[in-house]
Each structure stands twice: as C-alpha cells, then as structure tokens.
Image (cartoon, rainbow, N blue to C red; front, side):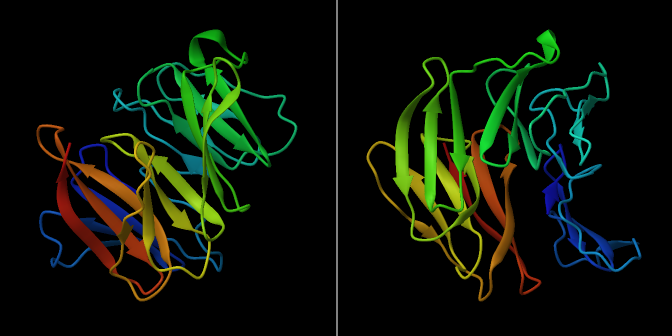
Length: 230
C-alpha cells in the first residue's frame, strides 16, 4: 500500500492489479488498474520498482530502487552503487531533505545526494529486524541510543510524524501494530484486523498538525484510525 503525496488517495497492490481508493469517498467503487502476470507485488507507491519513498518536501522528486542497486532522482539524476548486497528498502530523512538511507541485508547505508556516492551521517536513524528488535542510532557517534525488544520479528518500523516514538509492523502472525514511545516507554497497540497487517501509512491533515493511521490487511480490508493530534 502507498499513499499519494497529497494525502488523499491510497493505492493497494494485489496479484490482479492495483486498486486506487479516494479516502474522502472510501465507499466509492475504486479505480482498478490490471497488471497481469502471476507474481505478487512486493511494494507499491506512486511509481515503483523494488522500493521507493517520495521526497518529504519536493513532490516531483522520487528515488526508484531496484535489484540493480541504483537510485535515480527524477529532478537531479544520480546513481549510488558499489553495494555489498542488493538493496531492499529506501527512505528519505524527515528533517534533512538531502539525506536518504538504504538497507542491504544486515546493513544500513546513509547517503547525501549532494555528495554523490559518499555515505554521510544524519543525526538519528531507526532500524528494525527479524531478530525482534527496533534500534535508534546516533549516526554522529555511531552509537546505539535506544534498543526496543519486541515480541515478534519486525517487518516495518517507522518514526512517528508526531512525538518521539516508532510504530512497528510484525512480519507474520500478529494482527496488531505496536507503538513504542521512547520517553517514557509505553506500548499501546492498534487493533482492528482479523488477519496480518501488510502495510501502514500516515495521512496528514490539512494543517500538518493532525494525522490519521491507514492500515491494509491480508483480509483485504482497508482501515482508517482516528485523527491523532501532535
């Protein structure tokens, strides 16, 4: 599942194709784009290869990330290579518009698009793993700031758009998303599905001070939580 840069539409990927749902009219028949083939879609956003992540402020800038371990930006094209293993995920830094991070097996590489293929160090980065941990790193000193032990292998973990914490998604078995606050350590859950949650996104409100959690489940259900103020 992916959410549009203008926070109104979500796209859902299934084997038959793509469904685009207008969140302002969720019960309207969604737009369907058939894709054919017999393979499941690994990831989908607005344009996609293996993983993509829209720039946080430049709406026409997007990195496309595929098995060839190359990142291309639509506005200022450049490539990042010489990886030890193929990349799987990519994300922009939410506070520095020039920094992006990519994952490669058990490693995370951090890049500055102003410096080409030279990794750089932002102030903080969140990683998750199938070893049932979420970690927050200080990249200036390359030291571990916070280590969160979870009850199951973690497939996704993203920093919250408000407060100081992360929201995690289990790899298998669990039907709830867990939110971990770093200070103090609390652990609320988001429940509402009867099967595994495949993806989640945060939808911004009109004034960027409230957010809505959108979840997509293996039970073929799209769910939207209440608006959460900063």
